[in-house]
Image (cartoon, rainbow, N blue to C red; front, side, top):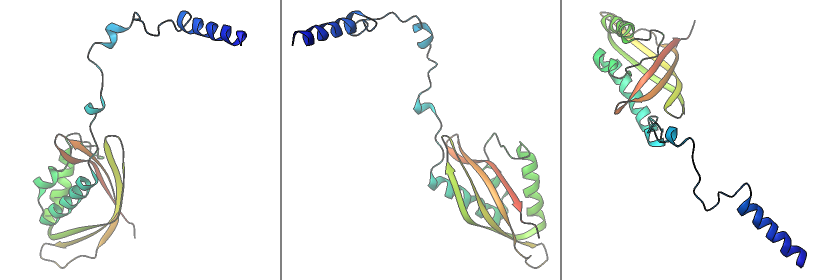
Length: 170
């Protein structure tokens, strides 16, 4: 029993008087000035990705505006810092303008839609079926392909950061 008491006292002395002597006491912080500069990043400062509902609404809105041929509406769906192949909105606008000028009616349907949520964005892909009626012509055979997209919260709305389409060959 006596040996156990001595072991307990030695253990207490090591904890309270040894390398862990800071327990229950104030300790000088040499890095305090650096840590109190107000440059911390809190979870509430990080941008959240769009919700699943917002992602679906954005994709539905794109399909509706595409069918209507609304160029300004479509461009409003893109984030300020677009990351398409063009890296700016002007070439994207020119591509949509060409389609809208050449067609009287158009539609796009998405199938097999899949996405993955990340810390601040959603990335995904889908299969698409595109139908177009040229001005003064009959409906064209449907074109099929794949879209890849990236959605972010831009200000108070969800927007496309990247939206690329790749037509099937053949």
